[in-house]
Length: 108
Image 1 (cartoon, rainbow, N blue to C red):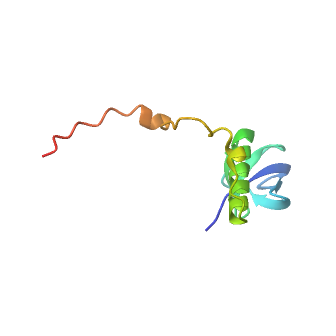
Image 2: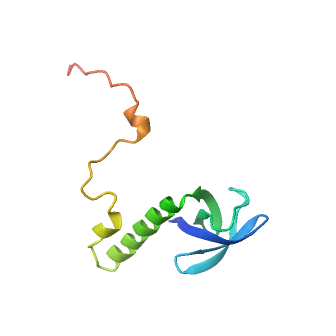
Image 3: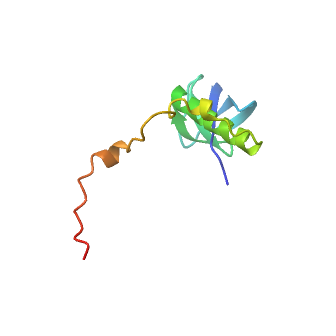
């Protein structure tokens, strides 16, 4: 299984960047996302950038990966890493909120 890791661009060249993230520096191919500015965030799979992220998205992914690491090491108290979700009612994604109601079934 491959997990995407958020990484921040520290050096940008044509076709690749040097990025920092999760405690390491990597040379990242940017063929799929185009050249990126220094300071930008990328979602990286196997040293290839697959998506451009906002800083907020990168932070959320980093916290989720940190929670996964903690749980795998036996620490199940990770709610502080999901402060944006704690004590919040679940919300349907926007594309589902706009869907027309399903027709009622007759139970036949």
